[in-house]
Image 1: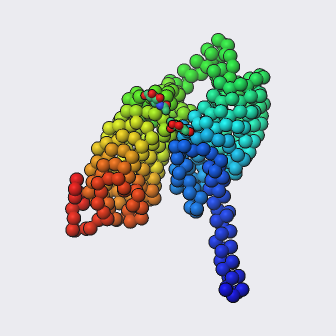
Image 2: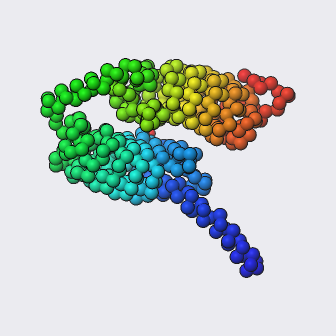
Image 3: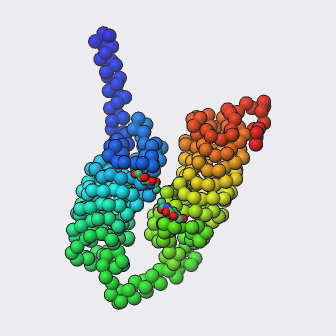
Amino acid sequence: MSPFIFLSLLLLLLQFSLPSLSTNFEGNALHALRTKLSDPNNVLHSWDPTLVNPCTWFHVTCDSNNHVIRLDLGNSNISGALGPELGQLHHLQYLELYNNDFRGKIPEELGNLKSLISMDLYGNKFEGKIPKSFGKLKSLTFLRLDNNKLTGSIPRELTHLTNLKIFDVSNNDLCGTIPIDGNFGSFPAERGGKMSPFIFLSLLLLLLQFSLPSLSTNFEGNALHALRTKLSDPNNVLHSWDPTLVNPCTWFHVTCDSNNHVIRLDLGNSNISGALGPELGQLHHLQYLELYNNDFRGKIPEELGNLKSLISMDLYGNKFEGKIPKSFGKLKSLTFLRLDNNKLTGSIPRELTHLTNLKIFDVSNNDLCGTIPIDGNFGSFPAESFENNRLNGPELKGLVPYDFGC
Ligand SMILES: *[C@@H]1O[C@H](CO)[C@@H](O)[C@H](O)[C@H]1NC(C)=O
Ligand SMILES: *[C@@H]1O[C@H](CO)[C@@H](O)[C@H](O)[C@H]1NC(C)=O
């Protein structure tokens, strides 16, 4: 090779590799985390560091600028320690690591997550002190560190968090005094220490005051609560779903936008069983419906086609049966549709080929029949998305009926 060609190649390489070094910054941080963790259930399987960004990885959510805004690894049987790398996800809003086997100290660097709204580390084996650096998390609204092995005192810096609504450090080994400054005056005792009857009465009055107007405005909370009444929840994951609250925005596993509309339902890996009803179709602002790896049964309700804002529907790893609703053709924003590992029958509705935003589609390991369509984005989905069914394909238009073999 001539020195000139070599130099050109080098420049070309640099040109392509430099931007990616800078653009997949968040993917690299997440991948560095992955390498330290033990993941016996293969929950992090899709975390492929060669992709241009981590936005199609399972359990990672990006905003429209491809910045990571959520990490959802609750109930994932993961063990290991966190390192400083998570502190590099400057756009992260939700850090959901609850009910795993995380150990070691909570890194000081998590105090650099300036955009953080919710940090749920409860139900692990974290030890050492609550980092003082959490006093810098000015947007933090939910901080749940309960059921760990934390020691030391509650950092006084946390009293400066004016947005903090929910704070829970119960069932740890903390010592010292419960602060009363800032929002700490309003947290209930079961999340800190003992409660006087006077405070109890005040809280009750406060609750009543907020719950009365809720009868009319808590439309979405009522829909979710109607769902709850039909489900079996042996692990008490839905325990916090209190229908007397003014809205469901402080309930665990529910996320609201700034107008208090429900935009996420995160019930993956929750050991829930039962059937879905039409009520979920009333959550018109829902963007993420995450019900994967449970014991949901029965049909997928047609009414889910009314969730016009939906970006992601993950129903994989359940026992759903019957057909994939044709109404899903109305979900114009849908980008991720994972229905794999269920007992679905019938053919793939041709209406799904109209979903121009669909990037990830997986119906593998069901009992589907008929033809794999090739129109729209279906030309780009890999064969693995369809395997272990009774599907034929790709489609031979005019030669074989679409429902052949059904
Ligand atoms: C969690 O992982 C361990 C191996 O570390 C395995 O024995 C156990 O069955 C897993 N639990 C669940 C609920 O998947
Ligand atoms: C799931 O619930 C069943 C009861 O329905 C219980 O026996 C089992 O231990 C639970 N599994 C986990 C992993 O919590």
